[in-house]
Image (tube, rainbow, N blue to C red; front, side, top):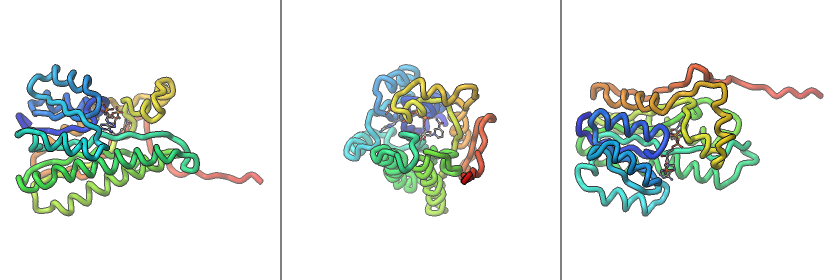
Length: 252
Ligand SMILES: NC(=O)c1ccc[n+]([C@@H]2O[C@H](COP(=O)([O-])OP(=O)(O)OC[C@H]3O[C@@H](n4cnc5c(N)ncnc54)[C@H](OP(=O)(O)O)[C@@H]3O)[C@@H](O)[C@H]2O)c1
């Protein structure tokens, strides 16, 4: 990993921040992308010369293009892209959900991830090396109440990743979908519109995964020999399991 250029989106918090640290500690040159500039400066100071912050909103079409087009070499030629920026907004039943929440999840989890992939793929294919690591979720496989659009956006990530594998066959470009269960990050706080107390309830009496657990998983996928491709990797805390089917019984 020494001096390899690694791009990480959603680098200012949670899994992305831990992933920046993991790759930088291994000697990579990490481009850390997010909107919160001070958090990216902190990472730059922690790893001088190894981490470079790049501030932009990944859902903003002109902003993201301008930010990436201005990158100098070697930062403009990533060996690894960790497509991590993502969020859930709201936990309402579909029939009560806000259209804006749905739209924002699709913009961030689907459109932005596809944009970032489209931005790096021609270069990776031309150089005949690269690795796309996409953050999916167990929600993309197992549905839960109130998680319909979030889960669907993560099912997209999984299917898109597998589809890329088909197209890239014959190239030395790897694609991986990492699909975590519950990880304690700012995720729940973002989902509940900044309500810290409500977010804390999610993890009460429960041992979730840590961002470092997932960063280690992502790093492991990237550091395997070049001929090995992890297609999808599902990882949960021991204290979590898929819920299975539920029945509604009519008592009348
Ligand atoms: N936590 C979990 O339980 C869990 C489980 C499965 C999968 N995941 C997935 O893992 C990924 C990371 O989640 P996390 O739990 O680490 O969440 P988090 O702590 O809320 O971090 C999300 C990151 O995404 C960035 N981001 C959000 N909107 C953005 C935008 N419009 N433009 C640029 N950056 C943006 C945030 O940075 P700024 O706000 O500074 O822009 C932040 O760095 C997501 O794709 C999530 O769906 C999480």
